[in-house]
Length: 291
Image (cartoon, rainbow, N blue to C red):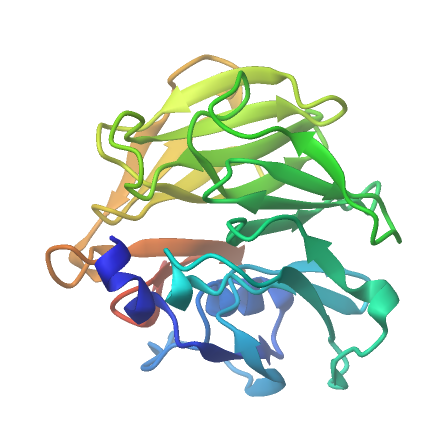
């Protein structure tokens, strides 16, 4: 995994917005703009560059007219030192905002952020670390961080924090708990439900052995959809079973979202718009729509 890390993203990347909606924007920006985007029949719109020269951005969380994008800096995996931060980008096109009060500084020289999510009700921001297994919380309007989940392995997360999703209807923060391979004693990937108020673990859904649980979304019916990146699959947890341990079932497996070659990564970012499921493929540098 580490040997391939510099290929996952360019050292500097572009953040763009698809004018037909922010959900597509989320899917596209999960690992930078695709090298060869697939045309979706009937889709219209254009791409607008919002910010250049970010240090390998990961996912994005939107608060009002501002997008917060963590700089994952995965091109330097294994090389510690330096600062990690979530950059604030104006969705109206003004680029990276210079106001230091909007910058979210992340702790430690091995944080390597991957997932970020905003609570639509409280306005709080949550940022997870793939190496520390921690989750940091920034209360609404504040750049003062709070520890929401301590370092793995602990009662909440056993490996590292990847994608996350706030589920206000159930009072849950869903997190992908996965291992990039740094610790063979803790392989696999799990969908973990944490109490949104106090981070107490509520339920765990183990994916198959040697999985990388990566991104999570919730559809209009309350079902969870999860990408598994190592094989390149999408799993689903039915709304009625989200609190029933180990209820994840295979939902989508197709060559288009599988890694293009051995040792590479496949399905990553997810979004739903207009009844269409969008899935990004990391090493294929493409995103796909399942109609």
